[in-house]
Amino acid sequence: MRAGYQHELALPEDIGFDVTWTPDAAVHQPTVDAYVNGLAKPGWYTDPNHLRASRDTRIWMLSHREFRPVADPWNPQRQLRIFLCESCRNGVSESGVELGHIRRWRDHLKYAAVATPAEAKAAYNDLGNLRLECRSCNASHDWE
Image (cartoon, rainbow, N blue to C red; front, side, top):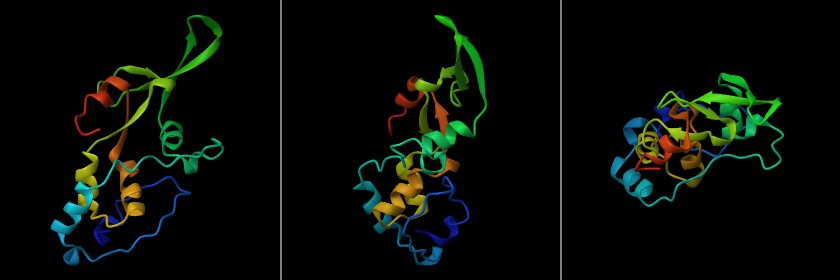
């Protein structure tokens, strides 16, 4: 992974991964590009027990974004959390929120100069390249 990316990478606090920081000048971009082009989508960090937001990218993102509580129209005693889709600026229920990439994820992985699956997953989950989106906006990206 490109050493210059070290200070840009932001992950939920309990995420760790094996990484080799390569001096920027030593990165051979054609090799990185070929590696990333052959990768399947890395996937999110998840906490199967939903106990620690600091180990789950989606939970971490939701816990660090503003929401508006609204009454459930079918059950007024129940509150729904409505988040802002950071693409279309419409409201989206918590269950409808998806994580979207600001920059195409393959381009971001190439920029980070990932060289291993662990590095690819870390760059894919980089909080600085993520936004909350509704399903319509997230599905509209041809790279997702």
